[in-house]
Length: 322
Ligand code: HEC
Ligand SMILES: [Cu+2]
Image 1 (spheres, rainbow, N blue to C red):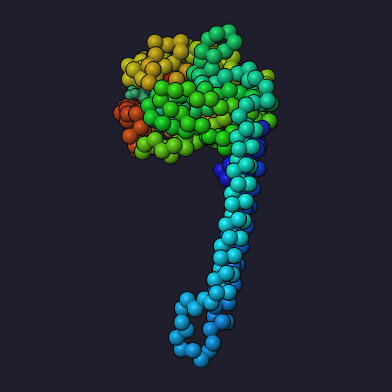
Image 2 (image 1 turned 90 degrees about the horizontal axis):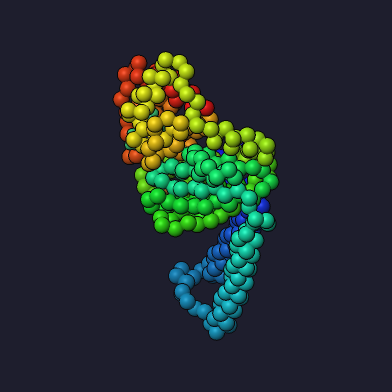
């Protein structure tokens, strides 16, 4: 799907009414522009035709009484037409707001999304009562409304996945709510839409909608702690991680329990890293660790210099985080 299609099409009932409104308002604006351009063109022509050829310097403002009445009538009619159109647009918007306010039935799944400069923490509370975390990738089952509780850890952000729902702000100290629903499996991109600092543009996320059985499998896999390192390289990598990365990152099942950065327990299972900035390949992961400040300047992940041996150990460990 091309990036354009992400916001020109809706993929569920929370977005469909919004998309109808989008097209209706776009059509209305284009129609108004065309009418005004035509009127302007006619006015220009009329004036030129009205000026007698032999008058060198036509006098401006020679409107006689009849002319003035015509002008007043045009203003009145124009104002009336604009008012009707704007009121119609207002009614349309209020109806759409009402239509998407509540999901068709109570959502059985709630995902908590916390916005950070410049990434998204995604938290699930499973029926068993455990919580699990991931980052920048929100999995949902198809055909069901999913509730999103939105928080912010720092400044005001806004959460918007155009194909699935309207946008909602994430405000520090407050929990906002919205709901999403995808009618069929697919991946839809979302983006922070409230300017939140230098890397605002690199604050994307993806919603991955899966058939309910696939979603249940994903959830079960994400719930597990990281598998213990088998190879010597991966074991050395885990130690490096504990020494250099664990202050910020958590990997469940190891001693790494940092709170201020994405949970990396199942890092390798994600499609993208750094909030949609890079494809999640082994090479990109190491590139990010060494050059985060070039890839995403001022991000809260520092550049971490590694010798080639350290990088290959760390890479081996990160690759195991499936
Ligand atoms: C000072 C805190 C800090 C340290 C230390 C740190 N990181 Fe990070 N890391 C972050 C933050 C914050 C992000 C999110 C950055 C963003 O996307 O804007 C991040 C993102 C990442 C990501 C991308 C995760 C994703 O899903 O998008 C990877 C991979 C990563 N770090 C690996 C490491 C490794 C490996 C180390 C140790 C060699 C390390 N980090 C050390 C703070 C830290
Ligand atoms: Cu933001």
